[in-house]
Image (cartoon, rainbow, N blue to C red):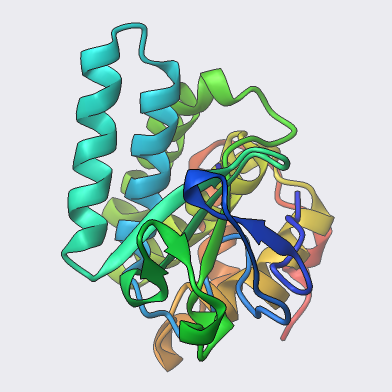
Length: 221
């Protein structure tokens, strides 16, 4: 779950099998790049499966989670690895790989890569409970205000949960601002109709959680 992660810009990436390959100037972000090559739901799911694999106490269970993740990515010709130095799940096109190693000469557009944090300021072990709570809030918004606001609420829940590992109503004004100005336009793929009502959607999120929204949401676009 979606603090702002460091971008992939000018970051050297270690590759599988102990080999080293550097890709500089990547434009990918903590929740994927601006091109949106992978469906947002898939990106969220492969992060969830990776976390479940890490927490599994049984080796077979962990392997099953990883296999599920890898199969979902393979359907889109992507692969994954965990960069341990900053606890980040990296997704990139399979065509970049030769014998298990990223080949720089095959990387034509680094913005196709995704970098997904696997930890955050909250407790990652509580992620499932947080997600259950946030999903219930999203469902309540949808039931009361319709699918347009539900989709915006889901995008906000993904951002707060994946980045900050906490419940939606705990988001601060600065985190709401980050969602509106950075995450939402780049990663949520909003339609014009969704974009036009996103602040109202967030007000509904806080109302559904019986919480007071940050004053930022009282401002007009």
